[in-house]
Length: 110
Image (cartoon, rainbow, N blue to C red; front, top):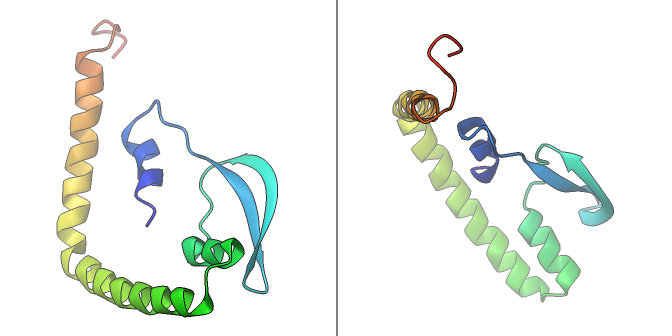
């Protein structure tokens, strides 16, 4: 999931960087270039396991488990989307208020 990349939207002092990688023929091509933002590479861990030389049986089993987890996650998100979105917005407002509370700015600047 991309939950780590959400930290940048919650905390103003967090910056997301990534090492650029391209996927060619279901294989990873590492570019060793540091870039801004996050890069979504579907099933990066499974692709990396192939590069690391794990047996195909292990990777296939992991793909099967990943598929089941993904289906459960999709159902959960669909069910809870409205509630999640509301909570996330409330959390962001609370975080910003806390930052303002402890900032060095005076009331007129805020």
